[in-house]
Image 1: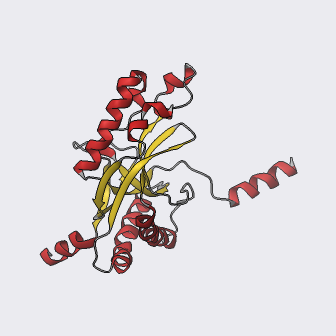
Image 2: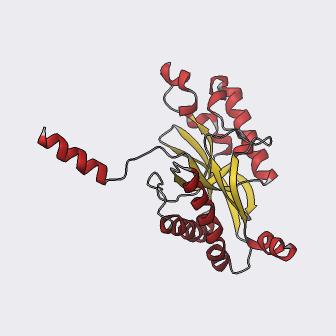
Image 3: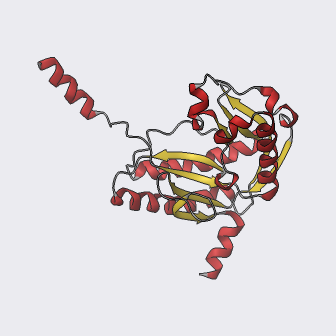
Length: 228
């Protein structure tokens, strides 16, 4: 019994791993990229109609910077503040220049997830941006323990979304389904916004996630401050 109590105390010292319910994202809105993703999704669907449930709507396309568990309204407010505070840091990194995010080719995570890859050289700058945002969240003592290392990837298919398929033993996505696009150019997004999104709140009419807060960065951020 004593051992059990000690163990209980030990565990309570560590932060409980509560499931993330918010995430910080860079929305991908470039029409060329989204149209191209739809082309790939349609091709996959035509070859394997059962995968339709595994396809992610293009209206939700984004790069995830971090995920967070925000348990109270107070914590949501702190997260909004953290994102707003990160704006100056992000602007310092960009130094008034546009950051182009170029997408090319398709990658996969153990045949369960398909995503569009981002060019290596564009990733370096974006990793610095992600770090700056993370620092602001950590300073506010927010729980971002569910976050993985930042590796920008644009997910458009997740086998885990089609649970019925998995029960039928459909365990991996075959390369043949998308090989025509495996090394294809998808387009370029000009980095202009970072959002704090809720995972469990009703999506917006556009189909994109519910946003608690957005900051504009780069050249669009400058226009915004002029208006103010």
